Image 1: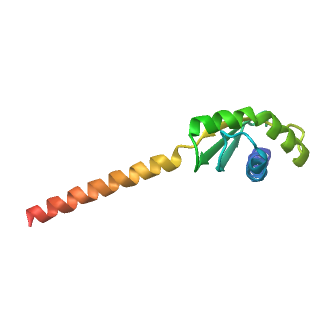
Image 2: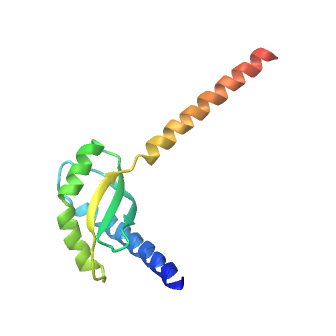
Image 3: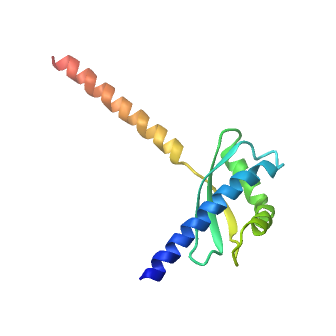
Length: 125
């Protein structure tokens, strides 16, 4: 049981390090499709062979940015290989993170529901 916990902790530590390193490496990407990108999180497979890299962008089209990042994945993999001291550096797969959009939509729905409730309360008084 202790081995599993250690393995899970190691997975999280490596994912966090990949996130930090990729955040620094984003400045090196010259692809015009890739603008200002923030790496939100990294999920590793248990064997470290693949990493899902979730990002958001403040400029440009998320789909084009994703294409640009996936195009640069080989270069980024090579740069990570130089930085990380692990046996297997994962293949990178970039995915746009919709979390912020979903949070904004939820907030809008809450505001709308509260405004409706307040309006109903005023009419009932």
